[in-house]
Amino acid sequence: MTETIKIIPMSSATDVTVQELHAAQDRIKQGESHGYEKLVTDAMLRPMRDLRISVTDRCNLRCTYCMPREAFAKDHAFLPRTELLSFEEIERLAKLFIQLGVQKIRLTGGEPLLRRGIERVIESLAKLVTREGKPVEIALTTNAVLLSQKAQSLKDAGLARITASLDGLTDETFQRMSDSDVSVKTVLDGIAAAQRVGLAPVKVNMVVKRGINDHEIIPMAAHFRNSGIVLRFIEYMDVGCTNGWRMDDVVPAREILELINSRYPVRQVDPNYSGEVAERWRYADGSGEVGVIASVTQAFCHECTRARLSTDGKLYTCLFASGGADLRGPLRAGATELMLAGLIAGHWQRRNDRYSQLRHNATEMPKEKIGGKIEMSYIGG
Ligand code: SAM
Ligand code: SF4
Ligand code: SF4
Image (cartoon, rainbow, N blue to C red; front, side, top):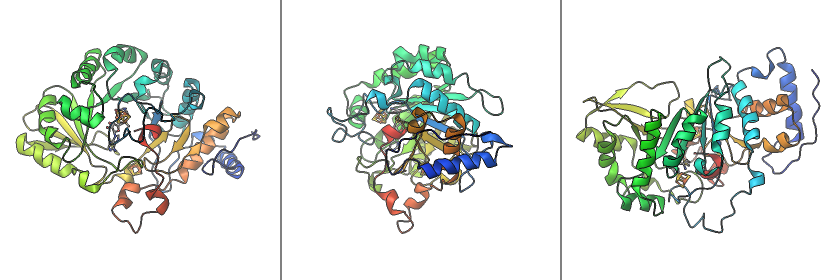
């Protein structure tokens, strides 16, 4: 099969070059007997299994650890509509990621429920099947502010699972963490609605920041025991450049677990699958499960299989990346499926990211990874 490269605009130093495009095409030609369906692995032999898609860089909260108001003020220049991947573009790229090995897709942001008509893209993604012929699992992470009104339509569209974020049970703590006047009740009502319509099992993420909401660890555990909801405590991470992260603000997962265990004894459970980021623990009295995500103190880069598609269609291979590969440019310029698949595969094959493993060893840390990190709301949390 002969493919010709059409006009591909170059917009930044991190975008693909014409040479790279040619190289991608060559790779595809060489692997013609397998096609681009050949499973890709990165430089550390990690396959590409999960795709996180940021459907908007906007949010109705201003969590201090993610979108601090000083950096994301009223006049902040969010991406204009035309820069966003359309639902059709998302679907087209998602199909290629799936052919390259992706089995699960998570819609995120920013706040994904702010993207108008989100149900439409869920509906089309939910029809896709993996290379093995199984349905692709479609999940969504939300702050749950709009979940009460959206839960049923999300379920009807084919969403399988939901993860909601909640950093405390008192309005005082929650509003301090989210820098908003939204009530905890609004979020809890959203979570209850998700459970009611069967978006199960619902998971709840709590980012823990020392001295700010760590006093809510036990109340949160107490609240979600016996509810069927899996509460996961996340170590506060140094994503982006705006949250003023300091190691002193991190409450290590071990400390969180010891605290919970002293009140409600827990036993460790095997992971659901290899590469699961949350460590699973079950209450000894049978009242449910909790998890910890120790992204800072116990890095899990060696089994990280996550690719991220930013709101404007760049492929990032690490949450802490400072650059991504532009897919939207080639896509809008008329690149074929084969060419786009070659670009995605080539970028993944060059991947050697392991930021969290290197974080502890500043001498090993590549300089470009220390400055210029991308904000989580844009790259997709
Ligand atoms: N707006 C949605 C929400 O909050 O669930 C989805 C996007 S948000 C970026 C995805 C997840 O990333 C949330 O659970 C949030 O708590 C988490 N997150 C954001 N910034 C973080 C940080 N600095 N450290 C750890 N987790 C963070
Ligand atoms: Fe918004 Fe989610 Fe970031 Fe909070 S964590 S500011 S809800 S995108
Ligand atoms: Fe994956 Fe990068 Fe996080 Fe390591 S630091 S687990 S490579 S996203």
